Image (cartoon, helix red, strand yellow):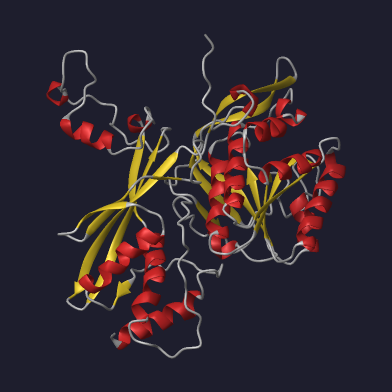
Length: 465
């Protein structure tokens, strides 16, 4: 084995530590293997086999493509599937690299490409008159999609080069390549996980903000599909690299035991019924916190726990209180959780008033939000405001005519910053006390969970005769 292999592997260990270290951040440059492509490729095959990512391979050109894998494996509620196209490339005769493209498909239209709905002419139609207008290329593409998702191939799709996966494979392969020639070092050798957990495309900036004992507050717009998915993906991407995470949800504290019981359950029909029995889900003014997407997020977190990953959830709302008294109670509940478990990262989600770390609101200059109070009690508190592209959300707003809350799907106006989830912090907090933003792309309304009926979302209902 060449000396550069040893030097490259040692440099990687110094930069990122063990696979379990939580401070690993994907480099913004390519991973280069100081071995010929033909020597490296068998380890690539072995990595995907051990990661339980079945694939088909074009052996003549050193290209493989994995089968579809769903986010939060085994759940039918996520709505997102991913596969990887892996291409071996020769950098030089003695050096090589991988190009890995993540291909994402969805049953919703969030990733839908412009023009896909256009009919380009009758030459594309095959089959008898009245049949669906599919070309041979359309049919071949469709047959590669997951079985049983009839709407799947009608909607979204995109492919993106995935540097995170490229470095993940590099980190998994290099110990085995390095063993071909012993290297004297006191540094621990990274070990790839036995089973690959699909957590979606890497959220930019997330791991820089995740620290043991730290509190990251997300000020959200309630009632979207995207924020609960953002939370579930964030947790997944952290716990799979060894960072224990506690998620704080702005739900009534009376639900703590019920939610904990569900997370520790098998997620069966009875477990879902017990979760949904709480009056919270049937509020006369459902403001989005009891949405279908929030219920699905709890299922996704339950599945991560079922894999043995260190996920916890706590709730901290005190709906019987109002004004400053409620803010004080929210603060004390969150503070108790953080101080009791200083070795964990705390991801706290709420409406966008509570996380502000500066005193005062437009209508009350003396108001002290939860973020402001926590900042005085804890060393590591970061508040991010929600950024999003225009779309819809399930919102409760005052009806000027009836003087009552009007809840429903409403349009939202935002700014398009692409479709990649990210977190971004500024050099200092803004006038509202936010340190930056978290971006979730185009937003889509999520209706109250009870509108979909009670029970396990994986269950396929059978129409009565």
